[in-house]
Length: 327
Ligand SMILES: Nc1ncnc2c1ncn2[C@@H]1O[C@H](COP(=O)(O)OP(=O)(O)OP(=O)(O)O)[C@@H](O)[C@H]1O
Ligand SMILES: Cc1ncc(C[n+]2csc(CCOP(=O)(O)O)c2C)c(N)n1
Ligand SMILES: [Mg+2]
Ligand SMILES: [Mg+2]
Ligand SMILES: [Mg+2]
Image: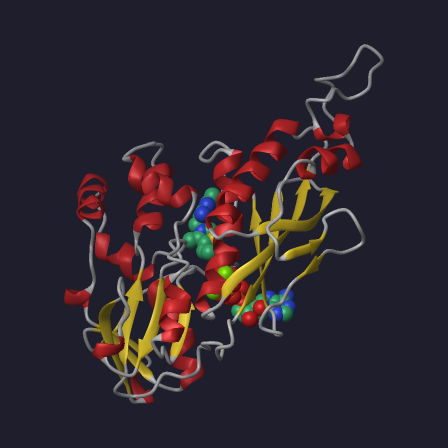
């Protein structure tokens, strides 16, 4: 353990998690937090009790690992907290559901500054508050690096879940939310730059269009997914589950001017970021017809017969379709 930050008796100081201790840290990050009415009990007992208005609960979990999903020299603890909650709330939205609560698992080394944990917690609560949910429980353990694991629960509001498997030939393929921003930010940060701040912040934390998920469900979306790994990679999951082909039309994709500028500064193709960049957590969905698209959604392609898989302007895409761990 680090010899820094010790008291005069050689104990770790209160500026590290080891100094505050497991239960002191739990108290520090849970006390004074105001839970929404759907939190019936907790945190503090062996488990929380959360209202499930619909009678069914949507459940999802995503893990963020230091050095894999974030770097502490690229992001503040608040950024990482926001990201950890946002990526999970995006999965809830992608089912057409509304989040009801969040649970947080945190692993960190003993010399981790207490401030990092309180900063992470502030970021997680800030993102949870955007979706009007509370953090109802969690766990904290020692590890060699920082790991944040979030579980989110959600409510379907009486509707059927929008799965990956309902797309049919003739349906319209559409998206809502940003594409390629986080990948552009990653390229910028990877080259040692910290601006332009728009794309850099997009890499630090996504801003998924949470309300667009339930809106798509109400509008009759037939399949839906959040874009975590890359548009083409994630569309591949819809194509496989629905047994359809999906053709993306590049002239329909919105390549933001900021991405064009970053692309020319770095000598990179912004369309590649839009097609294969993950971590923006836009929602991609299929709808029976163009007229069904809710506000904020725009068509990017069409659903075809299964033979062709995912294509771009009618042709297979060369190169990786998105992020895959261990590749
Ligand atoms: N260890 C596991 N045990 C059981 N199911 C798992 C496990 N890992 C993943 N899954 C399930 O496999 C499916 C795909 O997982 P994946 O992590 O790709 O989903 P995602 O959260 O939508 O994507 P991403 O992790 O890129 O955000 C999900 O239904 C997930 O619950
Ligand atoms: C330091 C650092 N290096 C690389 C990346 C890029 N990255 C990591 S995971 C992922 C896909 C989504 O993850 P998951 O499938 O686990 O949800 C991407 C695009 C990053 N964010 N930070
Ligand atoms: Mg997902
Ligand atoms: Mg996910
Ligand atoms: Mg993934």
